[in-house]
Figure (cartoon, rainbow, N blue to C red):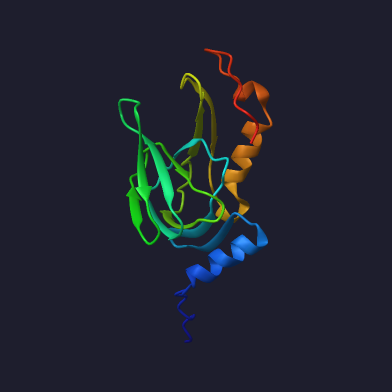
Length: 173
């Protein structure tokens, strides 16, 4: 009886970051195996939403610095600054917004989504902080760029970007 080979990928994070930057791509999935998901992401200069992940996340800054905005239980906003070479652990359910420039790169490790688990992406008014819109979906394959798709749906919908409280329209990304 022959056993299948064991897959234990070794990745060169710096080389992957360089290739993403050269190609102008946003995400490179390292693996989606067992219960583990790992990917390298390039910064999105237009990122403004808060992500609620049903899984814990570990983020490691490969290049550059990230400002990780997050919402406290009382609704106040804080920023954790993650410098190059540092990592941060974010528990599931914490509304967070990783903001970093396109020349910065992060490795993210999460748990694959279980059936019925939804990722949520929430936008708020820049002027009065009123909730604007939420995108919800089950992430079954991260290589399909679910964050990019959520952004396209939001930015293509002017009604979703218009604050019902003060009338401010969030600019299209």
